[in-house]
Length: 328
Image (cartoon, rainbow, N blue to C red; front, side):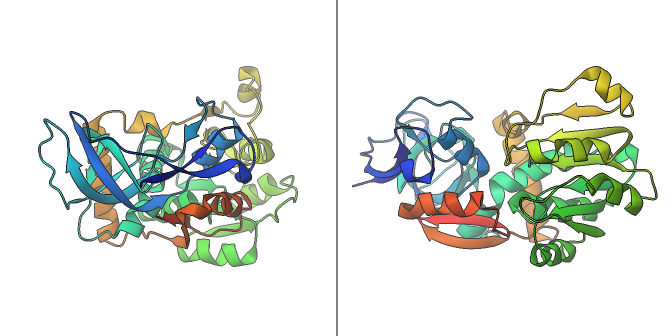
């Protein structure tokens, strides 16, 4: 019998349930995928908390790697036993197996293990978007990366550095600072969890010779919003792509002008890979970068799928360095 994780009410990690989930044969254009490694992402937590509304009861998870077990009518280019991964909706990756649209699957090269794929695909494609669509290169090389020791933060630090960026990372512990420095950050600022970001902008300005950064990548949200804006150089960009500490405040356009003709963007991962062609092109770039050693799939820990609630609690604690992977 197939099983999955779902929730019938929003709330803390305790609302996640391990339930039986019978699977029909894959329909036309679908593939049965036996999941072998499942990625845990903050968007999963936001859905569980109700920040992103879903119809209840709801399955959970966008990302997994696995093996093709069956093909529906009309499916070509895939074979039973082939290693694949997927990284977008509908939700339901927190499962032993599922049926999924064939045209949204990505074939895995031999250079990427299943665990690595589950750790790097969602976060790596997010990083691909931030580097290739969002980064303000014309504003100079300096970039501020919040949560720099997280799953996206480590990848973003390394990729920006490879592209000529000068990264200032923000982390919560000295141990995390060492991990970010190892990925190429030029400087790392430690703000303990629950500490104040009031002095962050002044430190950033000092590190950049008084100028500030051209781009601030902020996945933290509410707590870091003012510090991110104040860290920007004139005409700089604040890219807000997460809300780990809560939703950012509303933006007053006049205030952005007063602070230095600043810009704010909310880049969305799913827009970046909206078509199968865009998904596969970005995934190829990502896997090539991994094979060349430009990026490393950092795995903080592997946990049984049944312990998805504990995995969520761990990720929410911000005690992780790298990705959390669930194993059916």
